[in-house]
Image 1 (tube, rainbow, N blue to C red):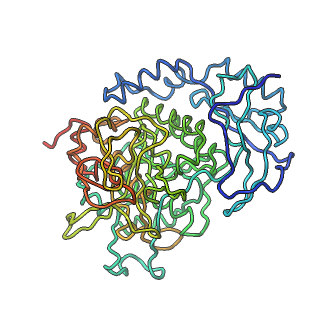
Image 2: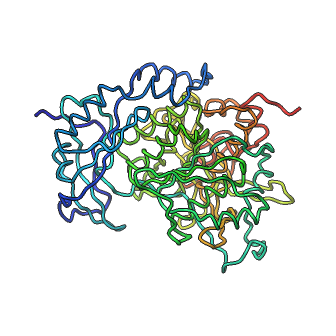
Image 3: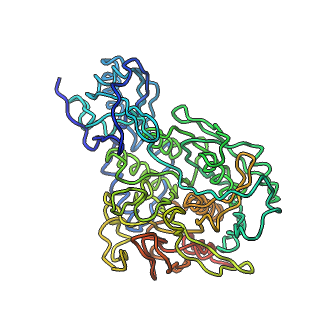
Length: 528
């Protein structure tokens, strides 16, 4: 039987990883198969209008999107026949997400996709992986766009940095030397509109950890607020599972919920828990985007990894999910990373973080915010040096320059050069852990920063604006670049190779928010 390599599916071992033998042939796993769209050219034409700043004639509802642009029934049938031929079970299929999840053994998947799964050992532990491409039979060539989950290496990391309080004390016992903020302080400093996010849903993507209701109750009591409604959704067997380690993924989960919940307390917060693999990450995002029950109007994503750590098939799959979100009026806020211009890659080159580098994401960078007497005293690029972290930002090596960034320049090693590919970030906000957020996690009071804090900050602001307008503002990137005066320009500092300057830059983007000005710019609703 003739086979074709699936374009963009090639994998290499993690740096420093060594094969320690073939994967157990009887091990069972689940694999996500992504199918092509129905009427894809029609969707692409609509997306092209969005990126040039045209407002859509209407934002498609999720069910309408699935019927128009979901997977074709003939393609679903073809994959079912393929699965049956190789003894694989179809455990899930979703027309709108274009997703089929197959279950089987390592031996069955090796034979079905022409791979040899192995067990690899690396500094962080072991994982099941492969090298080379996935192969498809002729009848699936052009039908299947991605095959994800054969490899279960950790795909992303959370973008938060913790500065713990000394001892388990409440916030009234903290010294002023901490110079940290409650999220509600930021709503005042950044001039957010007064709405509460009533009627909106904020979706949060998590790839590990969990939350405890008792911590949320205690935290919001400290803010004299009623805790927001929080719902956990399981994706690919992921679940709300607190580890008990405030420095682990629980810190990410609680940071996201507490910031978004404090800023938009009347919004419904839905947390999508999935495994930390490429399949889990993408399945969580497509589940949220196509969630007809909870209908999030804004997503907050604080996990990611260097573009070089992703396969092209995975990046394209996730980018297409963000395009779908844009078409349905969903804003996607993504942290830009905490490891400066290198994004933590030890090769001497500059890298940007994905999925923040998708042109359909609102990439969120970090600043160091100082306030005096309830007003911003200074705001500079977050860079605490080699060990303290720095905001991610730079120039994509994968995504083309979007129309709304044409004519911009990046300042690399103090030399300004025209931007030729997608630049990151788009916006910024307080992210330095030295001026971080007061958070409660696993019964412990902590100060947490990182660009992980900036994504839910912006998500909460957008939920407020959506609540004012009565409908989602959706994909806002082109409009933001037209209304840059609605942001506070951050002109000082660097993230390693890149420096800030007047206007947009690869450290702070367009700058931090002025909420009331953004509300007017994005909705046309002006103060009376």
